[in-house]
Amino acid sequence: MRKGRLFVISASSGTGKTTLAHELLKEDKNLVASVSCTTRPPRPKEQNGKDYYFVSKEEFTNIKKKKGFLEWANVFGRYYGTPKKQVEKHTRRGRDVLLLIDVQGAKKVKKTKPDAVFIFLVPPSKEELKRRLRKRGTESKQEINKRFHVATRELKELNDLKLCDYRIVNRYIPTAREVLKSIIRAERLQVST
Amino acid sequence: MRKGRLFVISASSGTGKTTLAHELLKEDKNLVASVSCTTRPPRPKEQNGKDYYFVSKEEFTNIKKKKGFLEWANVFGRYYGTPKKQVEKHTRRGRDVLLLIDVQGAKKVKKTKPDAVFIFLVPPSKEELKRRLRKRGTESKQEINKRFHVATRELKELNDLKLCDYRIVNRYIPTAREVLKSIIRAERLQVST
Image: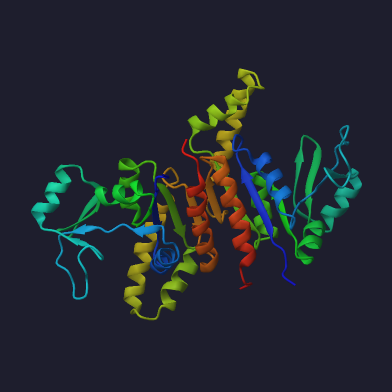
């Protein structure tokens, strides 16, 4: 049986990455989302094993010690990690795994799982990025500016060319989505080398 | 009728770009190659209007004066140019045009035809590039080194991210080819914005 692949997608804000991921997962039954471990308490409606694996600090440290994470990070005292075991279980069964992660995380995965497929989605320009952030209309001007600064910093890191296999300028979202799907299909066809 | 698009593909040596272009053109009947004008004399078996449009220095200067080139260059006293007229004729008829060109040329086309789709193909690493150049086995060591240096310089320019819409690391040629085809298909589906 064909072994599945890990697809690592990194995108800056305003590229519609969450919507994109939802669509890919909905349309492609062979693609499953990677579920992270976290030490933060579950929010209402969040399900263990679906949104996150909610674990204690001790459990997290244990997995970490056993090198059980493809990457992990400490965000203001709360731990988040991508469990290796899940990814391996799925890929062994021939399913592909989708991991939506920031560039910092992608860099770490590149070290622990160098045969993953790394895809970066970037906005056409800083102006367009600002326009898209504004268009949401849900945030204050201050919030938009903050997001814009974070996105600009992310964008700089998304230009780390040594890391990515595919870099897509997200000029028109439906086109980017089609290309993303095609990349997954094309990489699936690939004979192992 | 849908208007065709111009696809500008730039790739460094050792990415198999010529083979790739031949395949794309053979398989996709809606895709035509852009034919350049040149002032150099035809070589045996070269056909006017197929391999090149062979023109005199005067004719070339005339087209240039009328801003009839998407880009042009002087290579050791011989002129080469991409005629705007041909591209427009094809795209008006709903056909897509494939232009295989170096990064310098792509940069010029970005100015004269900003709505073209720019795709860069790069080798996975400098080491892999060297390996591929060696693998051809047709050139002397000196020739390989020369090619490698040219390719490294090209590669630096291929990292000009402001220019390209799609950047593909050509890790496995059949996969890169599939992705390229998909990009052309996806961009075709795109509703004009």
